[in-house]
Image (cartoon, rainbow, N blue to C red; front, side):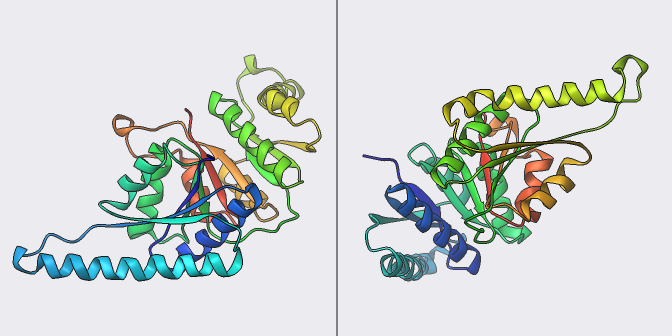
Length: 273
């Protein structure tokens, strides 16, 4: 049986967008959809904890039931299931990442709760994590951020596979800064070296999907600014993350973290595993 797309919901507008994106992708791939709702009950006096737990459960059930009804109304052919799990939302989502084809979360830049959940999940998840900020244009290309690291090749594989499934192309974007060191060579040589970084990163993914159109953008500039601008004309922005696991900290790469907050399209964060 195919792994499901797992979408985390909390009943807020952010998760409505995540649910819509996950539903459409599950239908497109013909894979199951699992709706996951997680949450903790604040540790207050034990005398009232039982009723509070029951009330929380009832609220969670309403949120999940509403989500299932939306999915079944729009896509009756999807196999949809749900899980209500107590616990820290980020930890619950991370635990499900080993069973998921991908995790889908909503985030419109709310820093206190969901922003921290997204940051933690994207650093520790064992599968791709989609941050669905808006619904994308179906005819736009996939934009891939390339930095020449090993995880860039994993991100390229995901980007080309997604583009092949959605009959679109990939814009591979690599940014760099001109070196002022005499030993670094002239500007044309630096351009050729950086272009080689991109072509080597894309080689395997393009070989697997030779019919996917690919364009290379190798430019001097700030990665966050360039990718943010590129995301305005993209249906998906794909970036890699280098850190995962409890001991590596919760800091996502600065570029990936910035894209989660500012990109104009959904962002796919690809783990290094």
